[in-house]
Image (cartoon, rainbow, N blue to C red; front, top):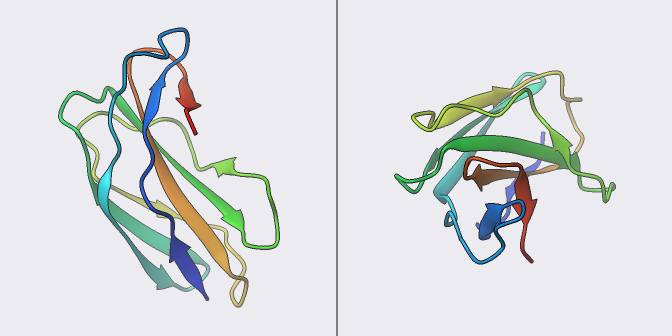
Length: 102
């Protein structure tokens, strides 16, 4: 399995575009059999984290599971296809929806 980890980006709460929650840092991906274990560091003031993935041949990001608690610093993305290259990112959120700024 080929994985790549995208550079962290800043995200904000929906409707509050001036209030950044800040990017995650140190995102790492460890491939396994049809899965990838993600770990990261995040801003202490984030209220949720949302792991996302996509096949590199696709332009569509998919959420993996539900938003994670603000104390979460890892997730294992399952049901992947071995041999398929994937990209991974983790969004940070405030108390509203997760929205990319850029």
